[in-house]
Image (cartoon, rainbow, N blue to C red; front, side):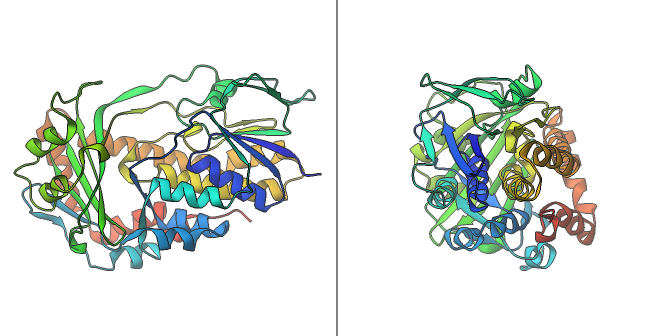
Length: 384
């Protein structure tokens, strides 16, 4: 009989891990505290994550559901080009375009690949007892039940209960800036796909299917600050004199489709695996959004973890191998994402602006080679 595995968290990492494990014959159950997991935001799926999705047979479904970015331009807020790469830059450097998809569409694709009844929504983990050294692990759930699976995969995000079970307290910390995300009902010139920036501010804009554009913005701001007359009104005022497509994106975005969040991270977990308990995705290695790799690394985790679980003599061995295999690559990306956030938000703002402008002095071939080491199809190695 296949070993029963409990996956905690039905986000991107949790669902992808459950799919990959089920495909390899494991008996998987997923529990998720939330009852409403829909979101109006988009997500960029870079070629490394598309390769991971191909490993579990879902890459083409994701490609078909999203928009594609092939260049990745960078401009100053007045429209001055900082980087104007060739139209096929991403394809040549990374192996294929990156795909931009609604998060809800992605989780729907992942969820549809699971057996019916796999996910229990509205059920959270209250505590884990034991570490599997002979006595197994007991999981107490919010519905009052207790489960004793053969293994637990913690894919429950930055505030992971499973990560605290393995590591003790893991407090989140405010990164110092806020982020807005939205979907505009317009199409932008493909040449403008990328980012428009100013001192301490980034605005990204990429195609989301045939009729929409996903955009995001970040700005240094006090924690908990909100706009009295609404986030959209604030953004329209703030970006009124910016070059297109920013004003048009805001003009064609409905107020209810804007998400505003203070950005938090925390120190990555020291222990990713012990006995039959393992962490994946943000539970193990939360990262800031500047490289677009948070969800992508969770998808890599899912494919690699399931492959190791299939080949190892037992699950504790597989989990230990997973932690050892993934730490070096993922932590490099965590550190670089954090560094970019610090540079963009340097104070005074003129320092951040100077550092950002100076980045254009890096030769294109150096930049693309470095980007390929993070996000190319070949950067994902399933570890066979």
